[in-house]
Image (cartoon, rainbow, N blue to C red):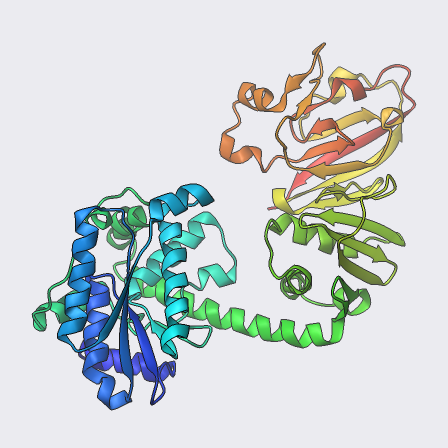
Length: 472
């Protein structure tokens, strides 16, 4: 099947175009976007659409960038298609906003396309992402960490108007189409160097996977993404149905969640419902992490009548018996609050799950029967602390800048960072190490060392025995 037929099949399968649509085509001048424009121009009469070319000059490659812009203008003009070119100082925008040049360029391109869509009355924005791009996106999200949405890659149709007609076509087939039709294009030399993360995936990781593990890796990753997108859509449908019964927006700053119904749901639906509740109040999930979401779910199971959790964006979650309240713009927490800024309260006695460490801690209080502090703290997975020295609530969190504590056997305090270095703990693993804290005090660097201030002595009566278990 030739490429033009496959483009039409993709358009028809995902209902990308309607008669009368004006379509903005994002054209960089590279092979994919040139093939996209040419193929759409070939079928525009059949689909009764009108094309409009858009190009962003990122001002990153000097004369070459201006040559790209001129090439795109000439290409569009030669086809009798209107063309708009926008110049953006991507380097400056990236520096001012703390972004990579890749991300900055993407943001500015989409902003320009959206603005142009309104100005010219377009119905669709067509982009030249192909099957290889899809596979690279899945790997990128897998390496950086992502849920179903991220691992589902790029949607063929997003927001009902951003379309990707080449999404099911291999890059090699696009190249063959260009050669067959004698189409010239521009080559961005930075795409040929492994200087960006995505380029490294394209040039190094994906070829290695194809050569050593599966020559059809690109198709396999794209197929997996398609399956996961369908799973995500199914879960989202469940969330929509559940939210109608369980989430109640009381006003602009409060959402009520019925815990009796909530606690019967699958964990995957619970997480999405919590995210949805926060989005209803704030419009987004900025600074809200996986750990925050799971801390809220952990809170919903507590037997106590009232508990409270504070999160970023001035969000407060309160458990009141059979109801979970999610609020914003709540006054500062009081001393009686059990969970603050994402900390997980330690159940004493009982078991406390630590989602970010894939572990749990069992805590129990025992009587001191002549235990030797040096002997009992030899096993790093078990800690014994003087419970009478604990003056406040015990909670679990990950490390924070400026953390210090007094390791057992030392007279003074030590920076947690230096302690990790001494223990030869790789930097990538340090965020996954739980810290048991009491207020500002680190009581136990879980799995490593207790704070000397909390060691048991011959005077100790009640001992808090803690044991961490890693989930397999």
